Length: 429
Ligand code: EPZ
Image 1 (spheres, rainbow, N blue to C red):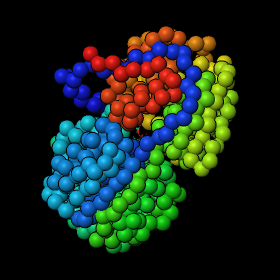
Image 2: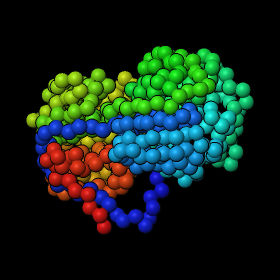
Image 3: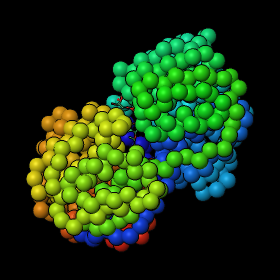
C-alpha cells in the first residue's frame, strides 16, 4: 500500500544543491511515534485531555481526523497543542480511507473496544516497508477476552467479557504492545505482556496511561504488568521529543562533514546511533542535559549495522545511515532484521552513484568517493530523509520527489536544514 496521494495536488519536490557542510544548532520537535498512540489513548477516558509538544505533521492530522470521525471533539489550542474531548465518541468504525492512509490509525482499536465494547477496523494494508500484519495485536486482544474475527477485509472485535491475561509476543511489536497496553489499562485486573516492545515511545505512552490512573510496572523492559481502571481520567501531558528526528540531524552533520549541535535530545535514547557515528569517525560530544554536538571533517570509515528492536540500532535510522556509509572508504554491511523489505531507498541512492548490493535482508554498501546529484523519489518517510541527506552531500543538484512522505514525519525539514546552511528549497509546480 502506498499513501493515496491526491492526484489533483500540485507536484512538490525538494531541490538541493551540494556539497554543503551543515553548521550551527537545531532543535527537534515532539515525537511522531509517541504522539500517535497518545492521541489514540485519549479515547480511553470520557473526560478531556490536553496534549502538548505534538509535532505538526501529516500523520498527526490524519490521526486527528480519525478521532473526529469517531465522534470525539478535537480542538487545536496551539501550533503543537490539542484538547481532545472524547465523551461524544459514538462510531466504532474508523473510515477505510484513513486506515489505508496511515497504519498507525489501527491504534484506535484498543481504545474503541474499551469504550464501545466493539471495533470494526479495515485491515491496514502493507506499505513500502513490508506487509506489516496485525496478528500480534489481535492475539493480544483475544487473550484479554476479546472476540476477534475477520470479514471481507475488516477486523471485527467484540468485548465479550474483558479480563486480565498473559500476552506473549513472538516479536516485540511496538504497535501491538501499545494497543494491548491501552486496552489493559481499562481492565480492572492484572495483565502481563511478555516480550513487550521497549521503545521510549512505548514508555511515553505508559507515562500518559499512568497519569490517567492506570498502574503500569516494567515498561521499558521486556515484561510489562498493567493493572487497569474502568474510569481513567483525561489529563494534560507533554509528548517526548523525537529521537529519530534528532538522529537524522546527527547523521546530516556527519554526511556533510559539518558541525551541528542538536538540541532537545536525550542522548541515552540515541546511544546506538551515536556509538555508530563515532565508529565511522565522527566527533560526538554531549552538550548539557539535552543536546549533542556532532562534527566530522574527513571521509567516514565503514562499519556494519544490524537493526534491532530498542535498545538496538533503530530500523527508522537505517536508511539515513546507509546514505552516510555510501561515502565511506570501505565496505559496510547493513542488516535489516525488523522489516522484511526496507531497502527501497537503495535504487534511488544508486541513481546518485552509490554502490549497494541487496541480498535478502542485508545490503552490502561499497563506499564511493562522491555521490552525484540526480532526480530521485522517496518511497517512505525514512527513505525520503535518506535521499535528502545524500543530496546535501552530493555534487550538483538533487531533486527529491514524493516529499509528502517526508512531511508525514518531519516538521519543516527544509526550514531546519536551511537554518544550518543547507541549499534546499521546496519547489511547487
Ligand atoms: C512502529 O511501527 C513505528 N511507527 C515505526 O516507525 C517503526 O519502524 C516500528 O514501530 C519499529 O520500531 C509508529 O510508532 C507509528 P512493529 P509498528 O509492530 O508498530 C511485525 C517511522 O518511520 N509485526 O514493531 O507498525 C511487522 O511486520 C515508522 O516512523 C507482525 O508480524 O512496528 C514488522 O516486521 C515506520 N505482527 C515488525 O513486526 C504484528 O501484529 C515490527 O513492527 C505487528 C508487527
